[in-house]
Image (cartoon, rainbow, N blue to C red):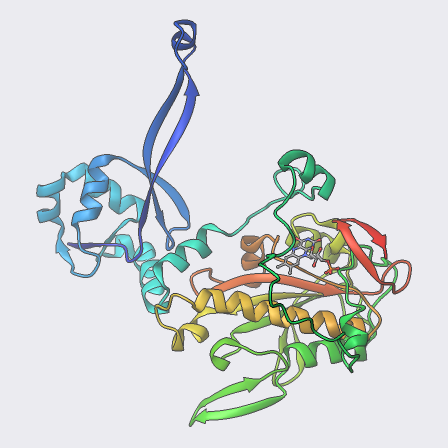
Length: 386
Ligand SMILES: Cc1cc2nc3c(=O)[nH]c(=O)nc-3n(C[C@H](O)[C@H](O)[C@H](O)COP(=O)(O)O)c2cc1C
C-alpha cells in the first residue's frame, strides 16, 4: 500500500488557558497555558487535534510522491501512520481510503490557492442562530463596549487641496440617492412577476453571450466580473413573487428562466429564509431573495492557484448586489445584502460541494411595510428617517 500527505494542510498552535488556584493562593498569577497542535485541512472540513509525533510525520511525508506505507511506518511508527490515515490527513491508495482520497483529489483538481481554500472552508457558518451567535449590536452598544471608532475617513493634510465643484445631478441619482437597506419588509406584500423578471435579468442575466471557443462562451452582464468569467450563480428563494410558487430555484442567466429545485409552502419558505439568514428576522421577510454562489471551477479555470481569485469572487458578488439594490430602488423597494449566512446549510439545500463552490452572500428585496422612504440605518432592525 502507498500513502502520501493530503494536498493542503495548515497547522495551528492553539492554547487553552486555565487558572491554577493553588498557584493563585501561593501568590502567583495562576494563569496556565496548555498548547496543542490543530490540523486544518480543507478536504476534511473539520479541525483535528494532533500530537508532536504526528506533526513530524506530516512534515516529512510528501504530498506529491506516493510512499510505501511500510517505509513510513518504520520511520514514524505504525500507530502514528494508522491514526493519520484514519483522520484523513494521510491519503491511502487502497479502496478503504477512497472517500478521503476522492475529497483530496477534488481539492487538487480545483486549483485552489491553499490559503484561500483554508479561509473559505473554515470561514463558513453552519446552523448559526440568534441563540448561538448571530448578533446585531446597536452603535450605542458598540460605543459603550469599544469606545470611539476610528474616524470615518483618512484626514490627510489639506494644504494644497483642490476644492471640487458640487456634484451635478445625473440620471442615476434617483436610484443612488434613494437606495437603502430594508429591514422592515411588508409580510403581506409580494413582488410582481415583471419586476422580479427585470431584477433578475438586469442583475444576473446575460445581456450578451460571447463565443470564445468551439464550445466555450462568456457572458456579458450589467456588473463587471473578475476575468470576465461571471462565476457567481443566482439561486432564488421565492416567498411571495406573483406567479411563482414558493420555493427554491436556479435562475438560468442565458435562458432567463427559473428552474425549480424544491417546492415549499409559504411557512416552510419563511423558515428556510430564517435558517439561511442565520435568524436575521429583519431580513427574512423579503419576498424575493437571491443566494449568490461562486463556481470556483469556472473562476480557477483562469485563475489557477491564484492569490487574488477568492477576493475577486467576493467583489463580483458585491457588484451584483449593488446592481440588485439599484434595480430594487427603481422599482420602489428597499433591498439587502448579507454575508452573515449559514453557508453550510445552503450547501446542503442546494447540493453544493464547498471544495468546488463558495456560497458568498444573499441579497433580497420587497416592498417596505410603511412604503418607500429614504432612511439612514443606525441599527439592524431599527431605522431613523433623515
Ligand atoms: C458585505 C455586506 C454585508 C452586510 N451584512 C449585513 C447583515 O448581516 N445584516 C444586515 O442587516 N445588513 C447587512 N448589510 C447592510 C449594511 O448594514 C448597510 O449597507 C449599512 O448599514 C448602510 O446602510 P444603507 O445600505 O442603508 O446605506 C451588509 C452590507 C454589506 C455590503
